[in-house]
Image: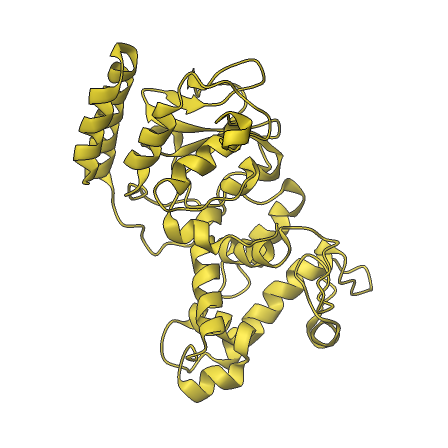
Length: 335
């Protein structure tokens, strides 16, 4: 079913109030679609609040260490490796926010804050070390054909010798998946330089959410039969996008990283809109809804309420995400 035909179906089955709202959806979606442009190759700066405030200055500074790196790419690596957890430790003995193994840290760890030691558990050392290591790898493969950033990421995963031997990203599925994952996640940490392309699955996701209007809220609700088909806020958005083949994380602040971030003036129906008590930290997001146009969202607000239309312009409005299939797939299984 095409996007346009889906909107027609939604409007036909809705009541008078909902029909008015879905008319707004159609108008906003068409206007946004007509204005969508490709993102240019400008330097990728960080999206608002995408990196926790404690690390934002570090990532913004060290992400510009060399031309193959940028702050959004560095943020994507840190998020993939540890979810910005400075105490993270893997079963393979990888340590800290950048997940260095001891041997690599011994060779490539730097004293980023100039305090006289190199502490893998200290983000002031680990984040500069991650950037420095990336840029060293980029220098090793700088004469290899192809995209330098992708070759750098491939070298991080498979080693620079493999990149040099194959003349680019090696034909290893793990390495190619790693390169695609990090470059896709980069989009969720970058501030877009032009309007973001519309989502192809947005219409179906809204159709699902619209059918749940009036359903009572349930904390932790996933809409299962044993829960009476009830949802909480992120359970509703997760189920709505699952209905169109996109699997989102369960928690609202993780859903924020499932795609690029349109500005408030560029919102389109189907965008997820987020609310936080901390305007500088996406990890503090506590609520999510689905934008439907005209300044309104469908959301499951709180215990005692029902799924309904609510205005998005409140003091806690944080930002929005245009969900993409690749963006959702790139999210780490642990954050």
